[in-house]
Image (cartoon, rainbow, N blue to C red; front, side):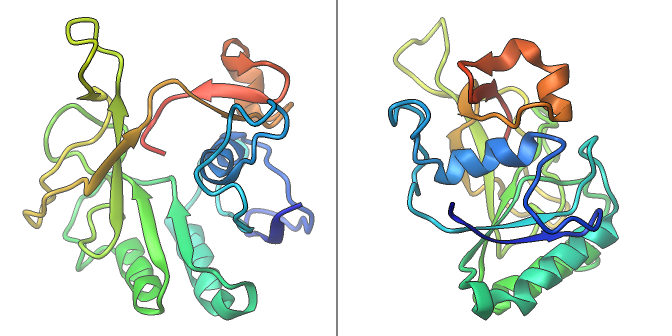
Amino acid sequence: GRIVAFKDLTGQKVDPYDDNGHGTHVAGDIASDGNKSQHRYKGPAPEAKLVGVKVLNKMGSGSLSTVIKGVEWCIQNKDAYSIRVMNLSLGSDAVQSYKDDPVCQAIEKAWKAGIVVCIAAGNSGPESGTINSPGIHPDVITVGALNDIDPDNPEGKIVADFSSRGPTKDGLTKPDVLSPGVGIVSLRSPKSNLDKQRKDTRTEEWYTTLSGTS
């Protein structure tokens, strides 16, 4: 009931849907109120309104041009839907400077338009220099994954092995922050591609458990 707008750039559907499953999990990470779990699995922004922009297909892949169109749509509709924060839980290998990267330039426009932009660091760690684009841009908040399960140090917290590391090709220190990203319980999209492939991750009827910098 809190999805105030939905734009499908991969098809022609008007009503919100998620045939991959990843977006639903991420949306729940952000804004689930936990009403299907007696509020046990609850996001940090349980009253937030959501705008869904679908830029990836059923398999979770797509073109950079579609991602750019999605960012531009958010900028154009920022005032209409009061878009304040944009989350991009996607990325590609960073092969050039952010100054020459077309997706980075698109999200820079969003930042300049007054939208806070949060980007997944990527799951290409633990080697250095593995931050994905557009997380390499200095103006965005790039988020890495924290793992609080360390058998050798049960009281401590460590960076998840898969979490991408900096520096970037421009010498920037990334990620900017770390957030829990291992074994996170969030919303499940029944019959989605991810749900069918990862039946072992289903947690109760309405939830699934996944890991990643998303």
